[in-house]
Length: 323
Image (cartoon, rainbow, N blue to C red):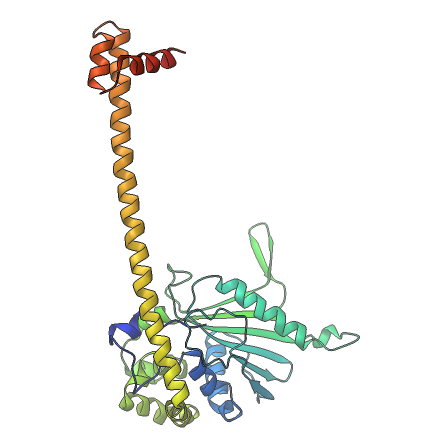
């Protein structure tokens, strides 16, 4: 479900072997979807929930991941959860997403699946209705480009006239737009180090490349400290590294194909525009000569000659125009 961001490719022309993007699916679930990930996952999730003004989770009862492909494909659009978390009566899906298409509908699908699986069998106590939260770390073009805020929350609302009222908090969607974050925080500043969420997002987008920056963040926030060990395990997995190399190579090839298609489409549009202009000029000339013949200014034969057609062809045009 991920595609390498533009930023990731501005710094390299070939697959990296020393560092792997932590938002790459197989790395992401290795970091946040394992039993040993509980501390770092709770830290990241609660940092996001605090910023979104949503109640934090308590102890994690269970944690799991569905995406285990090692496929290296850039076209993984299957509806598998990345990281599923259960904390008491709250069910959370933590996603790393870089496909621009249908993010909202995909999130709705995940929420529906979570809610369906979380519902108890038999009679339902609506006072204990489970809550589902979809958290998406989104690394593509901004969904709301005119807003500076990189975290937004969507929820079910009821609109009455110009007023909107919350319907329920049992289904929430939290979107973290990483390209907006990068635009504001592309260096490890004191402001970043003062905030757990900013430190997390910087670590996942930029800081993982620099060991000194990673250490500074983990020294500041002990709950993030285990990231280094988990990330080290991921880097030490030859299958995962090969999957990422294949993934990056596939992305470069896909980008080349897209660039070729864009160029060919642009050339086709330009050719079509030129053809349209030429056709318009020819039609305009024909209309003008028909008018001159009607007004008796030039003979039919002269008009036919200027249009490079036979007299019979021109007379047919003239007759059709008169009808």
